[in-house]
Image (cartoon, rainbow, N blue to C red; front, side, top):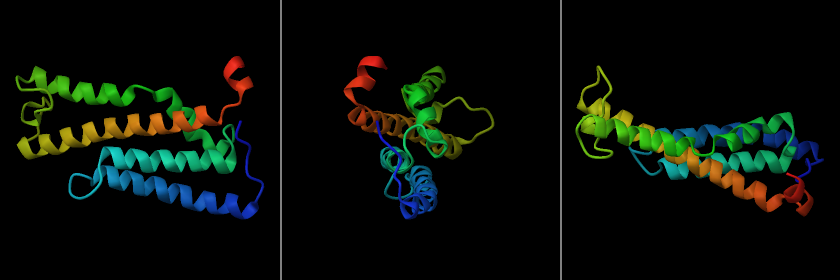
Length: 148
């Protein structure tokens, strides 16, 4: 089990750096279609910030609340990704052909933007959950695995 770090300097820097890293991960996710980035890179940055929170504050600390919540969200990203593709199929197009995305009141460029953003959110969610899950699994003691 990962124990909390006992240095005041590390904990204080963590409280400053982790939210900035998460904000940057969301920025990379949202603006990834206009430049380098996107769902995978944004998900990796978000996962790294949550792993950093666990390493600094410990897994069960109130400062690591996002880690315990995200571990319950396994598969949500896949549902978002498949849901957007399903809406495109329902609209009469191909899977992830955003022209046929059934969202009322949106023109074609807006449909493309919303469709790409939603699929990127789905990818980022799955990448973040997988990264955090791997880090937590690698840090588990034999006793945690047998009793958990």
